[in-house]
Amino acid sequence: MFRSQAFRLPGRGRLGRWLTALLLACSVLPVLAQTARPTDALGRYILAGRWEEAEAELASLRGRLDVDPVEILFLTGMMAQGQKQYDRAVESYRRILDAQPSIVRVRLELARALYEKGDDQAAKYHFELAMAGGLPPTVQANVQRYLDQIRRRRDWTLDAGFGLLPDSNINTGSNQQYVSIGGLPFTLSTEAREKSGIGAQLSVQGTKSLRLADRWQLRAFGSALRRDYPDSAFDDMILRGGVGPRRLFERGEFGIAPFYSERRFGNDILNRADGLRADGQWQFAPRFIAEGALEYQRVTYPTFPDRNGGVTWSFLGMRYLASAETQLLLGVDYYRDDARDPTFRNESTGWTLGHFRDWAWALSTGLTVRVADTQYQGIQPLFGEYRNDRFTTITANLTKRDWSFYDFVPTVSITFFDNDSSIPFYSFQRRQVLFAVNRRL
Image (cartoon, rainbow, N blue to C red):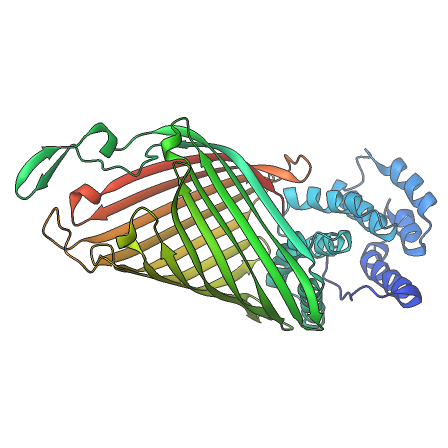
């Protein structure tokens, strides 16, 4: 029933109506090819566009034991799409995928309904996963056309998330009770040791695009991340924004933009930065998507001028669409801080592995592991030796897809940080548990 069929971009006017009828025919004919099925009449009504009869037939089929509920949901979605009731269609397809996320045909129709609804970010997510379902070449080509159209018509995007954040070490303090300085033992003060707390986190990010030409855009972007704790001395906020040109391709995009960022810690300015960012994405094969970014910024610390200097950061990642419900990520990043004082100068290289999957029972999981080695150039004056760190981050996410409220779904994220330093004073561990709600894809 859910065999992949070729489908095309929506047209306009008479051509658009003809393409819609063709799509409905391709969708329903596999059902009609079976003999003496209870849903045959419903399929014929949908194919003919006789919506009143289709709605009445659908009502009569609900609850019957001889009718597959998945088939009813699928035909409900197709009927809703034919009537441009995209919210209803999206809900029907999502209910199927919540139970059986591997059905490629349903994921394709969900992506198309989200596209028609204007939810391009979610449509892109499902189109990309559908590409891993072994689609025929003609269907792959049409999916690529949808993805290209999403890039070209993108006007604005907005993502937001908020939640509670229990944190075992809000000040990234040392887990050591004693420290040796100059060969003498010292007891660390309470302020220098790890301190726990429960905070609140809010994240917002968005883009706004202005079309300059057929495949050129001027895109502005901005983001804000805010963490508040009962002790305001550890409140943390990062603001960031920029604007620049972007070139669109049939299978990807590339942009470059100057930007400004600011970080406040304890509600006071910690640093300001201005710089230049280049980033892009390229889907060079149906199952492989390459992503990369490069930034250079000049950072100033109003109260710590010795930390002023240039910062370079780069990332190169590869996403592998293993199946219609699974993605894998491999990434490498590089960071270099050329602070004025050699004590703060450092460079690091990190590796990231990720696994993301949609499961039955409307559950989605993610597991990300990053390991980075950092070397500091200058001798640490208090300890008289060089510092080398290994920083490990492990994050596990669990999302309940069908607990949706205005397209927001609950997510539990558990993150473990471990910094193993050659100087024990700088070693620490940290555990965060974020109970949040985020936009559903």
